[in-house]
Image (cartoon, rainbow, N blue to C red; front, top):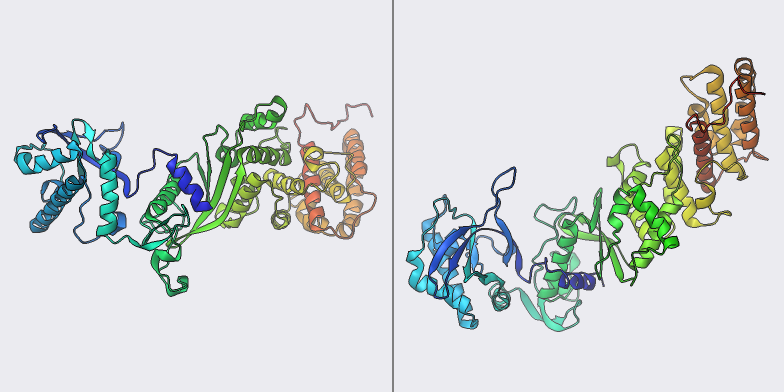
Length: 561
């Protein structure tokens, strides 16, 4: 199904090259009239504001990795050695002449099969007018050169493209016997080798990776070798690979995180694009997305099909890690829910900053280079499908909190997102946990709040110590509260006594906060989910303490108490 969708996408994209064509740098074009007389050689280079002149990139016949050390001309477009018989610096003259003769012979074969006057004009050029061609002084024979006849690019002619396919198949033995193509379902000759490598995958070979390959006995079965283990016709093989390369090259259709590339595409063009939401979401765009349900401004009116695939590389092979098919309406709704579930007010500004996948994944590790490929892949897959995030991510998050002895904004968002995605809480966490909730009576949540309060009391009473209570006790308090809080609360009473002498109003307010955060009972142990709620409670309470002064409820000696 994955390959079928790629072929469908390729057929809808004019930018994707035809079969056995590839984007080719072309520096020069020979203009001919209808009789094959040369009108001049045109320089196709353009000079950018900075850098060297760049050749024109155009779809042209290409043999790719089939063209090694042998003589193999490419139809109507090749370097100066093949097209004009000019010896580039460092090349052998006798070999260049063999290449030139092979190129002219190929042109004549095409003319015998194709009745287009443009093709006949090129034959007339070689037979009658070749010596009349004047080359510019700056012409470089190492660059590709092609033909136009009466301003018609010969390589663009459909008849030329069809001839090139049949010629290359036969000349280079690209196909074997007829088998049912797994993509189009037609009984066709099966490609022996898949010619188009997939490029742009982290960790893959620079020359590209193979989507389908079988070059070892371990990959062969039922007596089938080479590309016959997965029978696909040449046209479908090329279209699928070129479509994937097109998706990987376009920043609007792919997202690369670590060693994984996630590609997205739709059957029809859409204004909704998940890439920007998942990479670096704009707060205003997220607000519009969330409010689109109420305003009826959903981008997915007709809900066409939506496809997503996660890819990585294993040396010379492509690894398909996951593949999903949904509708744009479903994906839009799932990503909307994704941002609602992670909604959490920041402690410093008091706003809610939506986070992309990388920021969420990075919160689980000390450095970004430590992020394993499965973490961002899982986050993206759950974001677009709406599936609950696995509790293994929650375990990584609470473990990181214990290691760092605290809860960062990014990690608090991820914890809330994980817990909200399971939807087992009443009221729903996405609504109840965007900020401090003093009415939430969950013991684990209140234990987290309580740790933040006693930490604040210590800081108010004795300043900023080298090691706070959280630095010493966060790990044990978040797993076995009953064994820790007895000690902490006794210390806190001493700190409150000292604080009353310094700032009685502040002491009274913090004592009220402590009583409000005190659970009815201190749990002996906390489950994994409860440890996540503990982290949220701790983060929410600290956020309340670090609100801007105009919003803070802390009191001073000037208050009437």
